[in-house]
Length: 276
Image 1 (cartoon, rainbow, N blue to C red):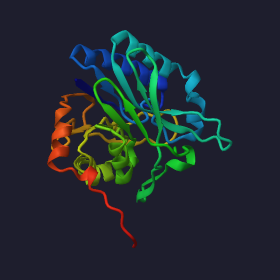
Image 2 (cartoon, rainbow, N blue to C red):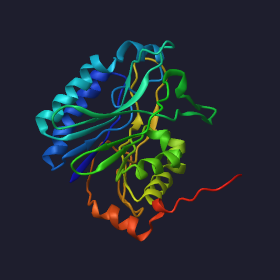
Image 3 (spheres, rainbow, N blue to C red):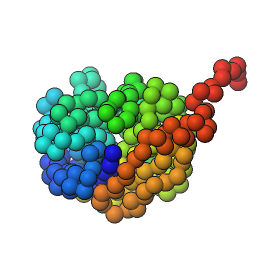
Image 4 (cartoon, one colour):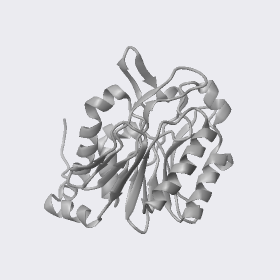
């Protein structure tokens, strides 16, 4: 199976971002991809909650999601939408940061709401309170496809190894890790964290990323780290996209998952312990 990971610089305009995807996805398929992955918040990168309230949709009504489902049908591919911001019916009005796995028949085969919210002060100028606008999910998700079982995660989830171990123990062979990573934390931790999650679980890790300075019509601009990454089950980096927008391809061999787990069967070596 050939996968194509899209590295893009989404704006705060969902229709513009959809237009970009509808150019890139057919290009990826023309180059042999049967599985295409996009980054976190593919539909809208914005720090303005008021703007998000105006342009985001509930899942069932989202024309951009419907269009991408149709794209998957037309091209006959599996499509991982790293995440969309979507409206919810929560009384506090918070959104969900939701990943979608779309089949070649256009069905949403799996959806995952980001569990861990990015609430940090990286620097005085880079402070994030994702939980102010997004409510956390509460359910881990694996999805079976004809080519592999996928474990779904999003961005800040990367710092919580127990989630990834639980996904692997539930059958995941490929971990999907779309992101809109901060440039500061990306430079310090991105590669190490992705390699660690692959090594700990014996999974491939596919991490499509946002990159660059994001165009906004309202509010402050965000910058993201880029470096879409593909990591093999033994921990070696198979591809690093750097910071330029584009498409990264990988041909993965699921026997590599079995081989890594035979060599170091750590998933079967858990022991109960007391304390601390």
